[in-house]
Length: 361
Image (cartoon, rainbow, N blue to C red; front, side, top):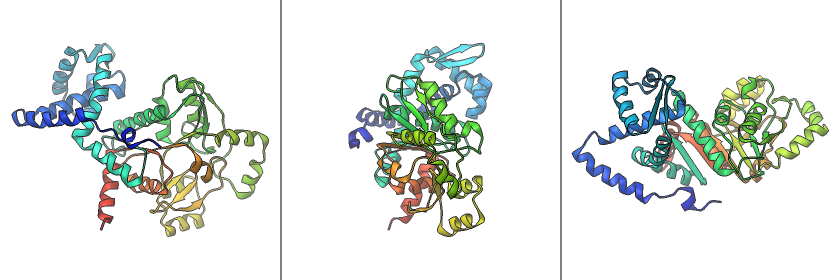
């Protein structure tokens, strides 16, 4: 367990800067708006890689004329570099962006929300990115980038890392890169996943993570949804047992969170199971388990992969999910009590805190 200072560091320099900015704003009311605008320009370029001015203006909802002025200023400061294919961040731009992140989080009130959620759900760490992944592709990309960073911070050399499927995990994998603590690690699917888009299956994501970081991977070629007889038959297969033994050695688990009913429909659960989920108030799905508002498991599908007891004994569990529509599902999984690190977005965090405050006496 990380200590409080490591979980949620207090940045005295950031607080002092906020005080200075508050004073300067009395003389320069537009100061914070300019800071946020230029930060957003740099941040979007970082997420998009090489990008043209027209595409950047559209993603920022700015006119090209206004953006041209900002881009020219940032280029003159050595933060952006222009090419025929578009603009990219310079090394100085990348460093400044990293240094500005805690400042922007403080200005937007994100630091305070992170601490509130950390305390409410007794988590080691909470990371909140701006925006709403439901409506912004760039918020979704930033969520994936922050999830990749949380994973890089958590892993050690020669770790076994289990990963679930889904679009968020697939996006997270694309932000991974070689690092000394990730080279040689083993990536495994947390469960079977045949039956959905190949690129969203846990097998594909585990192999992508391994290839991008210089690690190794093992695959689990079994369907996600099994009958009881098929389940009992498969787990006795020597090859399946070999892969399961590695999966259950995982020190780190990184997973997404699904809306219970949406996931049940995607997995084509029976009418009786769907009726039971509705009746019992299912809100969230993770690892083939369905959870109610209190974080209690109310239904479980027979799946080959991580079991509940495996998750409970895992050293680091990282949940990555965002969008206001998933706020209740995320809160449900947090109340289950096995998550160590939550990576979410501003919209989901705001909705969770609103719900918590309404329920407070």
